[in-house]
Image (tube, rainbow over all chains, first blue to last red; front, side, top):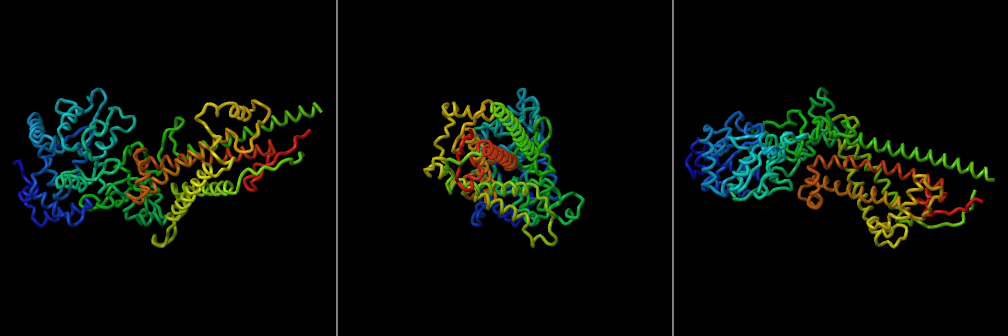
Length: 361
Length: 226
């Protein structure tokens, strides 16, 4: 890969027409919630600025983030953008391997010191000095610390890197920790989702490339442009929710009619993501669109808030699986039993003192 | 039967209004809240655009929540500035070891049948004050803050989102906050059972007409039987 290549150069070399290039730029500006007058600045940045080098490292993860791009049915412009980025360093997608590849990583780290973006897919095993995730003969814990030291910013791809995902679900045997627990002194953008939507990923990179800053983040460190509203807020089945028309089992008539999946455990009302807006695979569908309740995969610790198919989470209580209502009913029962017992003792004491009084009289 | 020898005006009109509005709000909020979590009614027939079934349950919950909040704020105002000796915070000092001293211990012992006489208070006794602080003051405060945080989710970047939205990351996500709100709503039925039992029992044992006092405002002292 020649250095100082711009995104526009790359698109041209891959046979993308200027018309498609401009479409990509304007679409990205829309996704980012920018005003139409800012679309030309994206075009200008894509055409003139040397592309921002991205090092993509993989920790404890399932590669679903990478898969979500390379598995798309036709090569979209987002794929090109990402394939190009991975060419710098991506130990999963690169043709080179071993010492050769590690040399590339060190070269980028030296040449673009303080300028490159570190993309992290997966999280960090911290138990026993991180031996449960070894990459290239070193623990991923060390690799992350080393690579992050000179990065301009870190993008935490996916729920693993953002919040921990299945790896740090209870009981978390490998001590898996999200990137933000390890690296404290760098700006981190969290792009949760298992996997995140590809347009969201390109949008974040395009924003950094155009403006040189990270997009505006919410309280959990996620870009507001994509994670500001819940799936529920833009869901095309919302009308059925408001009307009180719910699917009650996966084989009933309501399922065929496409009613709301709230009672089937849909986590859409508590999940911040763009699935119901942007959808997946070039707008083909998204889980609720395919008749499956949202499992809340972009929310922190969603594995421990299960089961997926009931609204109310099960929690361990008095040695059994329980939920908020069961615990509440036990508490109410205990209060009623306590009151009844207290009343009984009061009555017995009263009878005793009456008897005493009568005896005296 | 003992003769009524004294009539004491304990609960002034604002306190009685607060009490009953609060009671109504608690019942409505608990019922609509449970329904929102588990909408059990059968779906209506026809097109979704004709109905607002679930929407109305949520609307009721939100409307009564705002009445509950206004009522709660009024009660705080009344406690701090109302100049009402039976409804102020003045006597309640759980941070001072003195407060946990003799009167509190006597009341606890009385409830545990460790002493035969009942200490008699015109207003709240120290155990009742503590129960109200935990269930009504702390409980309502949590429900109000978590409720407003979740209400703010409907309008990202709005007033409630900005002022109360910090509870969402604090609890580790929107779902966990919903769960905490749902779980802690059960303190209200628990409280109501204990409250009603204590009121009825005091009325029967002490014969101070405490049950009707929250309607009339008056408690009574009866002549000790010879």
